[in-house]
Image 1 (tube, rainbow, N blue to C red):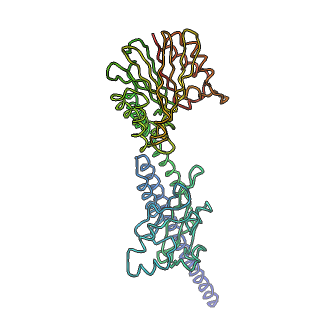
Image 2 (cartoon, one colour):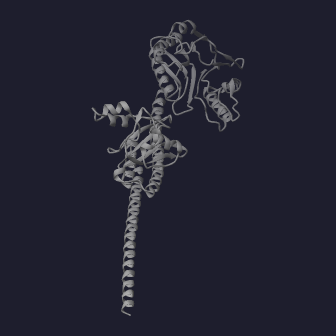
Image 3 (tube, one colour):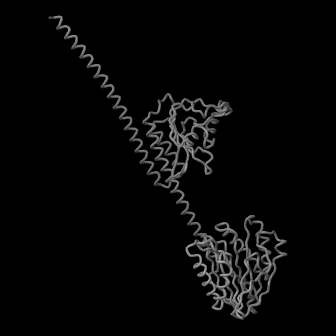
Length: 480
């Protein structure tokens, strides 16, 4: 009987020991699970704090480089990484350019043997190589992540296939998380965080957190880029509006009071800045100069060339009464500063106030139309001439000549740029010279102002909703 008691007692003790061991193991396992849970919760809390901070950063008008810094350093803090880096694609999409690398981040690019040798005597050689080296968009581990379009978790960076090259050395013991940055069908670049092996490894949860945060970072960068582009566009629009206001000042504020004549001019730019212009110049001895011009191209370059041409012509017109001679002087001064793909077509005419004589020169411009009130017909006025900026001077001066024009009472002269004839409708049909001439014949007997307004309306009705493709400028001179 005592033996049975001893056996039972021993069994109870053994069971108690087993239960104690099980409880200890469960307690250890539970403590580990709680630790892992706390770690995950802490990581997720750091992630949410980072994303919240990133959102507030985007709301500010932040420099892109500072945004890159916020993202890389934020990812490093969330994942307790050794360091991180961000590489951005250049505009051509051919190379990855380092934009931000944390101070303690080991290199993520291969190091040529000569750089390794130089770094032994120059402590800055390695840092310069890493921070200044651009990579082909499909080169190395960074290019691999971009090409794949997926996040990568490398337990050993140096074992990656891109470092198996006799001319490239890589000896860092790192694990890395690398993600492509992609927004709205557009590749932006690559972001990466690294951890030295002696500091631990990235877990599966780290990888999922990194993937999520890198996607949000891509979205943030895309939004920041759009915000920056809109801000720059607004600034550019403001600058262009200012430039247009300045250009409007260069156009005549009112029509000239020329004895025996009635004049009306109009400029309708296709863009905010016009390459067309017209001008009225009061000259010595009661004469007047009138000019209409069309600079090749559109926008700011055309507007600048127009302003140069206007200034030179106004200066020349004060001392030279011949339109052709004045244009020759302008051409010689303008030619050195005109790009090869640009030139100025122009019609310049003078009206002698006391006797009303008209003299005209044409520098490669569309031929003016002259309505004869006596016959109700239209003549094309075609004196020879070469556009300004094409020839340095010799050919221009040999070809471009003055033409004396006789105008009777009721006659009407139309100067215009090619934007009138080349206006298009929805079927890409042009308004054309024939329609312009018919409208001119119909409106000319009613005076200069009516010609301008009727032609503008006719072109507008013809084009309909089709955007205006070229500047439209007209000057009409009516003999009283």
